[in-house]
Figure 1 (tube, rainbow, N blue to C red):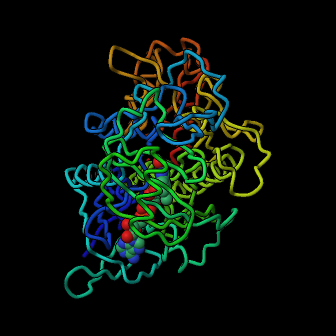
Figure 2 (cartoon, rainbow, N blue to C red):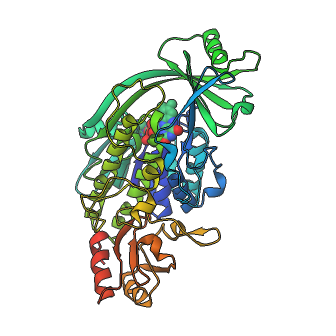
Figure 3 (cartoon, rainbow, N blue to C red):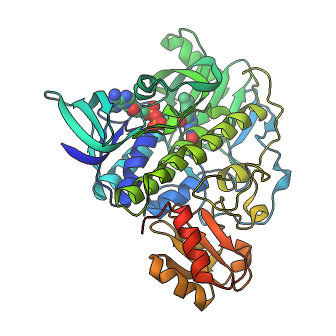
Length: 494
Ligand SMILES: Cc1cc2nc3c(=O)[nH]c(=O)nc-3n(C[C@H](O)[C@H](O)[C@H](O)COP(=O)(O)OP(=O)(O)OC[C@H]3O[C@@H](n4cnc5c(N)ncnc54)[C@H](O)[C@@H]3O)c2cc1C
């Protein structure tokens, strides 16, 4: 069997990779060894940047908005119990910086992972991805021209030949291990037990507070669909003990509580030292395990990896870009993972049980979601003097950052202009003439000040919505300037 990209792993990162590749029209096959999603969801909070990516592939209407109060992120308190006394609220980053700036056309998404995965999977299939559940990759080998994998579903093992392989096979990543890719970071932190249960507790979800660090019990949160999870220290708990813990956490024992399942989680923090090896790319937890407790970075960053990689693979596969474009995946995404790792330990999670805090400066949630900086050969003009993250209004259209959001008409944001192909944002006819021969779509936008441009300037935006280059004013020869920038940033062959 032949495909262009083989994705191994059907969790959030792998399924997103299949979805975004299919969106770009790339023939993609995904193998996942399990028949479906785990009965015990992990992630529930998806940030607004991920919301933008999913809006971009037409999924916005299927995804419920999170209960996060805008600008505050996930609200968390220390409490005696859910119904009892609440102590201080803990913030990952200081909430004082709240401004009136609207950063995105969408809000975060609050949906449990076992609902999210099927939504992504169905959409990927609708767009043409070949998704094979209950199919395990047994082995793989790469050569100069491609990757050959042996996979097995219900029947006998068979071979799949692909141009590229995306390893989204989770934090233990057998693919990463086979490639001998080492990891950096704090490593193993602790092991947690969890119990997932249903209980009628909606009345206690007020003020956007959905996370409770309960004295002497553990961490209580909800999936927002009647299901709750209580995280406990590692140990063996029988059912009566679990019920006691649940009632203690709630502060009431007169409710119907249905235990759905239990879990055991190894919490660790590490980032792979290389995100690729030849024709193999690591994405999601295979590339970085980022503990969820101080930023909810894990799945979000994995979905963003997939988005970053998909357009590059599509561009190289269709011959528009040279394979060197793929080197920018590691150059762009690994620093983001390392920054997240640093921020997790610089932040306060209300438990502080994972060793010494990191002394690093804190970056605002909005800076982490909308304002990370890429420095790579696919960006022109992002120098080493720039910080790794800032608020979009501070970046003001800086190359290497996500193109800013402004409404161009009711319900339509500048963010909606990007997704397929390269776009030149400008409002001067000479730029339109310059863009056409390059196959770059010119979008006339009046609010060029948001992009840090004069009325005669232009910004070249990549298919992932990141600014690759800008000319603040009209140069003498806009066509030559744009062509040079486009060929360089896209590693273009055309
Ligand atoms: C308790 C908890 C809560 C969390 N909450 C959040 C949150 O709110 N927000 C957030 O962003 N992150 C959160 N995270 C982190 C998040 O869950 C993970 O980062 C994310 O699910 C990782 O997705 P993935 O696709 O990279 O890996 P996985 O979900 O681990 O998927 C890897 C898949 O690969 C498959 N696989 C492996 N080997 C093979 C093979 N050889 N052949 C076929 N298939 C294979 C596995 O079966 C698995 O399905 C949380 C984590 C935990 C533990």
